[in-house]
Image 1 (cartoon, rainbow, N blue to C red):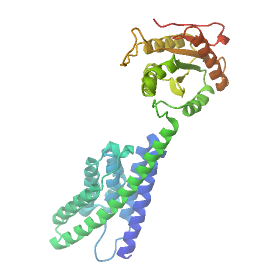
Image 2 (image 1 turned 180 degrees about the vertical axis):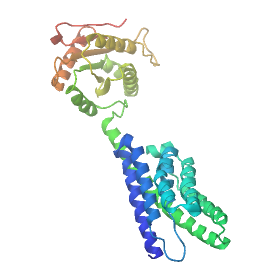
Image 3 (image 1 turned 90 degrees about the vertical axis):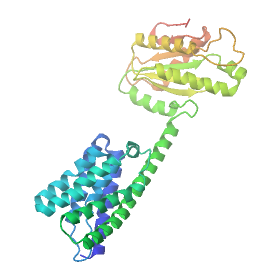
Length: 367
């Protein structure tokens, strides 16, 4: 096989397995760290199996999949990736030369590449620096020079082979890193678009669209409660201190509500000065305590505003509706919570009210 065809075959092998490894990032979740070492190790073994060209320079690229695994995933994955090629080298190649190839082309690259790993790069929020390609290529050049000297090869032959390995390793690593970075950019853009589509731009809370999707799934498998929350006298506040301060109040209230709700509760901005909360429970005691705490927390919200009247407090009103059976209509539940909220607003504000279908009305006024 000619040197060019050999190089082309290696290139196709590297690119195919590298692309598969990158796709695993968003497809397999927790299984990713098992599947990636298998793919990287298999790619390394295939590169070992490629027939060497007759005469000229020998290009041994078995280390490149392991280097990419180390750069992208770090030490544990890079060492796991080395298991398959190590096993193959031990069984098939054997001898002193096989041991040298194992050390210089499998073990050392796997360890050193993991030192350049950054968690941000794997998360998709950062890209792998192109400096890594020439740094690792320089490492491989040094390893091959030392290996050639240790094996007793002529200095000129070792230098010639090592320089060509440096050039080829640099080119291939640069291509692989560019592919990785482009995939990360696409992934980050997709995540950003998803976040914008599901997030309220002002409060940074989930928007109503994402809330409805989650609530529809939840109500099918368990009883839930819906809490409609409204900031009392918000229009007066907005008119008195302006829209900028009104927006700040919305953000402050939204964050305070999010900090108070339970781990399994879910909050979103409903629209205007209203928020909506899903609580996956029909426990009235819990809902009463949660509503009381929400009301109390908001009354203790301090605002640094000019000409703020003495004793002025921000407050909220809450309306609640609770599922009485599974698969109840979510929209009906929200409508009932809205009716209960209207009751809270018309009976003094700064309180919570359960919908009358529960047989009783529960009120709370924060002190």
